[in-house]
Length: 57
Image (cartoon, rainbow, N blue to C red; front, side, top):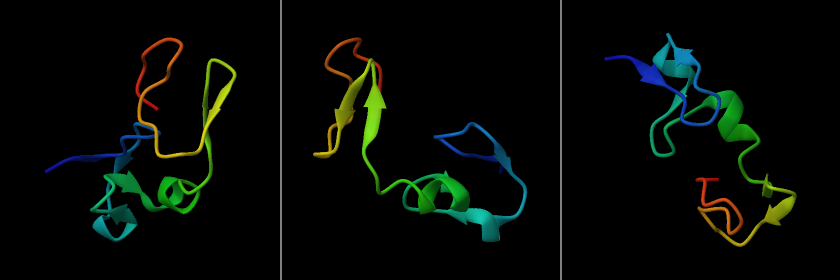
């Protein structure tokens, strides 16, 4: 099974570098707690879609 980070799209070779619950590599998971930005708007209340363009955050 190929593991691909849903944030940075990198292929994760070693399962030790993978965070199962979030489907993120460990590097992205460590910084995932902060606010997300899209179209110049900050999202920090658990939103998952940009209100401006509709892209997933």
